[in-house]
Image 1 (cartoon, rainbow, N blue to C red):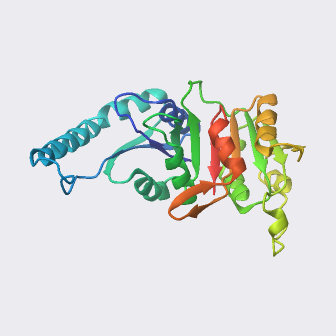
Image 2 (cartoon, one colour; image 1 turned 30 degrees about the vertical axis):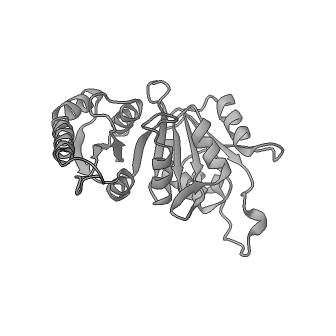
Image 3 (cartoon, rainbow, N blue to C red; image 1 turned 180 degrees about the horizontal axis):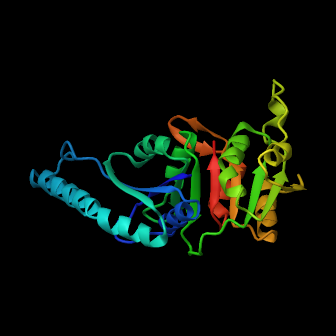
Length: 273
C-alpha cells in the first residue's frame, strides 16, 4: 500500500497533479490525502494602511478557509469516482513549504503540480520540499494524460540523493513493464575525500524482482539533456532522479542537472534529496 499526499493549491478544480495523485493511489490500492494550505491569519496591519484594511484581510482569510473546508465532500466524492478507496481531506494555515514538509512525514510520496512562470509558480516550493527531505513527484501542468507506469527511466549517478530516489521509486518500478537505468558520473565525484561503500543498483533492483536495462550517458555535453533525450527515446512515463542541492543564505538551490530536469521535463518526475 502507498500513502499519497496531493498538494491541492486550487480547491475549485482538480489540477493535473491532483488527478495524477488520485490515479496513482487508485492503481496501487493506496490511500490519498488532499491537502490545501491557506495563508496564515494576518496578525498586524501593513504599515501605513487604513484601520479598515485589517478587517478586510481577516474576512478574506476566513472566506478562503471556509471555501477550502467545504471542498472536503467534493474531493472525497471525486477521488472515490477515480477508484481510490481511502481518501482524506485536510486544510492547514501557514507557509506551504513548512506545512508540506510536516504533512509529508505521514506519506510515502507527495505529488505537486510543477508550475513555471506564473503567479503560482511552484519551482521554489518544490526545491524547499526536496531539501527538507520530502519525496516528490512533480507533474507538469502543460497537459494531462492518464497516469501510466509502464515505462520508467532512472537517472543514477551514485550520489546519496540518487540512491534515495531509486529506493522511493521501487513501488512504481515493480509495476513497470520496462525499466531503464541511465548511469552517469556524480557531478562532485572529483572532489570526494572519502570512498563510499559500493552500491550496485542493478543488483539491488534485481533482488527486488525488478529487471533493468542499462545505458551509459555520454559525458560530452549537458548531462540533463542526455537524460531527457534517453527518456524521450524510451517513451518514458515516469522519470526518477536524485535532487542534490544545498541551502545558501536561506535560499534553496538544486544542482545543475536536477534543476534542469525539473525545469524542462515534460513527464512526471520523481525526486528525492
